[in-house]
Length: 201
Image (cartoon, rainbow, N blue to C red):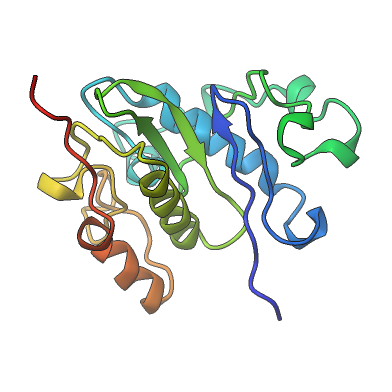
């Protein structure tokens, strides 16, 4: 079986694209899930504190401090199902561009975007593989875009808004593990693709 490819919307931006040779290389629902991830990361990060969708997972479990959070902002169905399906994932042609997709997603793949001044610009979402792989793709893409001037995150030090494992089950460090190879890549992201620091003025 060929590896899954991923959809990748940017919240508050101009691009909704798919990877692969055609839209059939992704799960059709991945486009909407990716948009939810971008929306979540954008909506719940602050200028001084980034929260990835992976950081939300433990918080929303029964007994967690944000239980019910994932039901708080429904998907805007008029936006995500608008236009001809043949335009979905086709960059600027996608009818979801410039619309508020809404929705909350609480597993890996959504990250906030910060420019070189530390300004929060929006969110990036990837979907179509395991949540750990989606997170890895988003983290690496954000790094390649140069939009990873993350001020601080839910994790200590360089971890910032990275996916974390092994927490109490009800905290930002409680995302479920995926396959061992992906887990190792996730844990090493702050070393292989470290976030950048805003230059002092």
